[in-house]
Image (tube, rainbow, N blue to C red; front, side):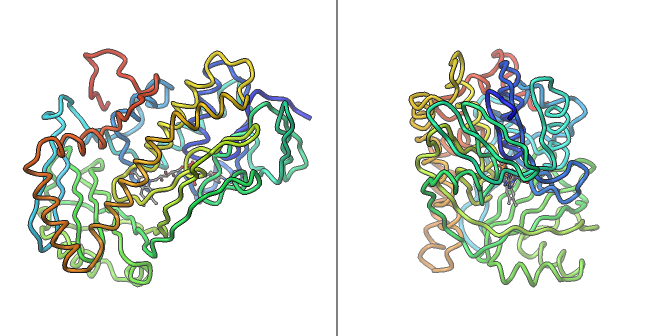
Amino acid sequence: MKEFDIIVSGGGLAGAALAVALARRGRRVAVIEPTERSEPAQPSYDDRTLVINAASLNILRALGLLPDTLTRMPVARIEVSRAGGFGHLALEAAQHGREFFGAVIVARELGQVLLQAVENHPEIEFFCPDRLVSFETDQDKATVELASGAVLSAPLLVGADGNRSRVRKLAGMACQRHDYGESAMIFNIQAGLAPAATAWERFTPQGPLALLPQSGGRLGVVWIDRSEAISDTMTWADQRLMDRLVERLGQDFGGLSRPGKRACYSLVRQRTPWPVGRRVVVVGNAANAVHPVSAQGFNLGLRDIGGLVDCLEGQNDPGRDSTLARYARLRQNDQDSTVRYTDTLARAFTNPSRLAGLLSGIGLAAHAGWPTLGARLAQAAMGFREPVCSLARDPEASSQGQAA
Ligand SMILES: Cc1cc2nc3c(=O)[nH]c(=O)nc-3n(C[C@H](O)[C@H](O)[C@H](O)COP(=O)(O)OP(=O)(O)OC[C@H]3O[C@@H](n4cnc5c(N)ncnc54)[C@H](O)[C@@H]3O)c2cc1C
């Protein structure tokens, strides 16, 4: 049996970032990941364009996970509009005291940085490809059995194994799950004229549509609709896709061309109200999954990681009940409000009823003319939600908002 300080099941975005954070604090960490590194179908590291907010950029930077070689496209302006309705809202980071809200990073590229850090850190042992099959806990430790037959033990087991978390299930944690009946299709596209450092969120009767800046004048598209409609859209010829995109956007960005490969994801909301058990905690999508409408999922996961690192600081026993309970209480408010906020946005703007349509138009108009609300949206977009973990704090006032 191999002994560690902490075992992390899942080497995706959340698991790998957490392992690096813990190892940098001197913990001996085991990471278990079923998908081989060279596998192009790694579920966490695909072609998704992630909006990483300013607080999350601080976390990644503090962990050495934001090298100069990693392409990131800053977002300084967010345009929110609704097709066929009143209301247009433009959020400018500069009006909220920052140069950028955050930056867009391709998940596959961030994944390479994360995996390299996991593989190179002397305090991390990477069990890959391997899979957690079962575990049991006693007063002092969790003992984990892997598909390879290896047995590991540690005072704390972390489940970072995604939506269908096996750790959460085996620990018997209650999880509220809602299937939106919607899917998100992603692809990127060349734009003739794409204003720099700008992201667009467009609410249409079929569902929200986001356009995110990528390098070389390309835009990452996140196109959300009912799941049956997305299955159909996935089969459309490129020209039909581009025509419909222009229609839904209400503008053509100087001509759209060369759409890239499409991928789709079904959308669920998940909330684990008490994400800790005896010697176990779940983080990332294993704990909470949100609709991508406001680009909050991984950002929330990173704030959880920052909160967990703070709670474990200076603790000889990282899996003590009182420490885990403190973590759960510390993170409850942010988790609750992020899941609720995202769910409200997803439902309010996609409800086809006329009343909801009218209200969402008024809502946008109100946001536009009501500075405190605009400020709240901007604050959420930057991710500095209280309590701000030590990794997310600005290293110094002069670097505020730096995205690069
Ligand atoms: C279309 C779309 C757009 C998005 N855009 C954004 C955005 O702009 N900003 C943002 O912050 N978030 C965004 N998100 C959310 C973000 O992708 C997720 O929050 C993030 O992927 C969660 O990472 P995770 O590591 O918790 O889970 P996952 O990415 O699901 O990774 C789980 C890992 O666990 C592994 N695993 C599975 N089973 C086991 C097992 N039994 N044992 C061990 N390991 C196991 C898997 O192989 C995988 O590596 C978006 C999501 C979608 C669908």
